[in-house]
Image (cartoon, rainbow, N blue to C red; front, top):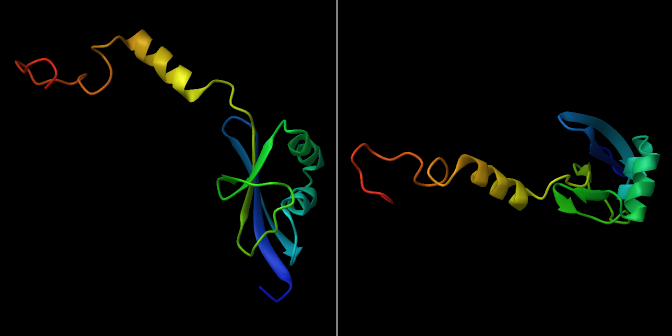
Length: 114
């Protein structure tokens, strides 16, 4: 890429299993907010500013004022509907103690717990 320009990718998922990625060329010194605006995600930028959504770069949370580098991937994260720990507990409870976890597959004739 020529001097003074950055190549970044903006990724956003508006619904489960639906990811939209856009490759953008931005001027050097561009920030996360600039990348979101260039991708046409003005509503998402406002939601990030309010704290309703979270923005990040390469899987790490970042503020809208973070300066981007060439090759960065800007991501917008939706809030989780279910806490992963709670979902795991509920799955485990529905499967029962014998049908899940480390001891779900035992050798025939093997001792419990081994």
